[in-house]
Length: 199
Image (cartoon, rainbow, N blue to C red; front, side):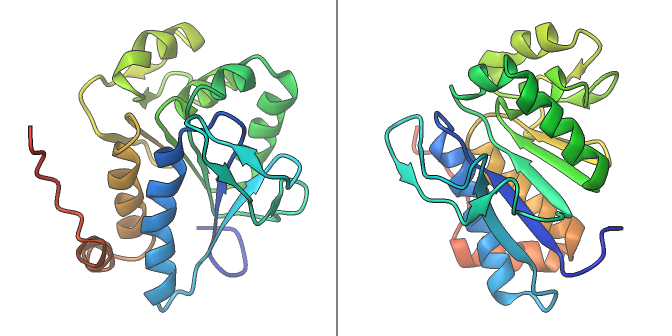
């Protein structure tokens, strides 16, 4: 990572964000930060620093606002119904492009990929999103090489994940990339994340 200073990961929050899109990666990355010798900083932020109401009613109070978040090594853009508003917001898309210019690694969860596509970040690149939004991803940018099967797609400086719970897998992958596979395994064990669906 080329950004100088301590390793910093920012998770964007906004009205209508899917709860697990934020909280799943935050739990993984926060657990990593608590034990890593790299001492990464993991923080949440909203456009104006104010609280947000998530898709299913959970209220979140972020650490800071976009104007004050400072340089990041990684941006995580979650999805949820609120992305439909962001897709149509030229100011937000311009902000995403601006962040891209200074942030070495851009990650998305679920329909956060639609925002990246609308901002031009996924042109001609492999990416994924929630299975119910794959067509919407193609509409946002027909040149995207849509992967309908992957839990997450790592294309170097952009990592996209499929729907909701796939953000946990993607975040563990980020830990492995940013530190090591052993660090990611330690986080997974600590969270007792070993999916075995009952149905």
